[in-house]
Length: 193
Image 1 (cartoon, helix red, strand yellow):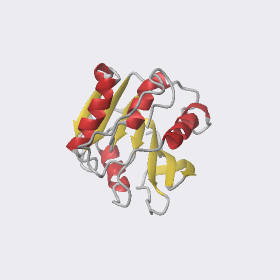
Image 2: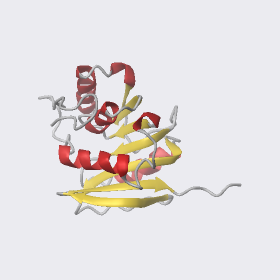
Image 3: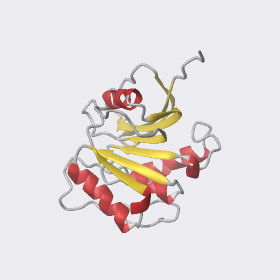
Image 4: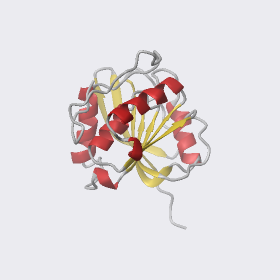
């Protein structure tokens, strides 16, 4: 598995031997498609560059989404995973790509995050399949103030999985790549007071 484009194009994303069986990397094909949507689709970044984004990679696993974003020019990525081996794997890959100054790592349950220190404009959410974690993770991100008002959230789940969005979120684009369904979602804007 490799970085698809940008300054780290072609660099391998390693899966360490002691990484747990719960780490399921997103394929290069699906990652390339997602980043093409973000860069070129009307539902993507809407003309903004990757450099404008504060990125959060939740259920980060190998760190593939965040590392791909760094390769394409984002200034900083925060990686979150409950599994220490996943965080260790993401850190290992960031170190290999000399991205230690542009990354933070948080070992935490994404469904119980607490208050954020900053907001993020681009969020990748790729939980283990069939664990029903998307809805509580989205609620946790919203309630903890992790999401910028116009945040774009990319979620991945198994195509056979039912994953209703919590109140306050809506889907703007949906695609299927093999067994994976990719959705771009946003928060419903609150009316001005």
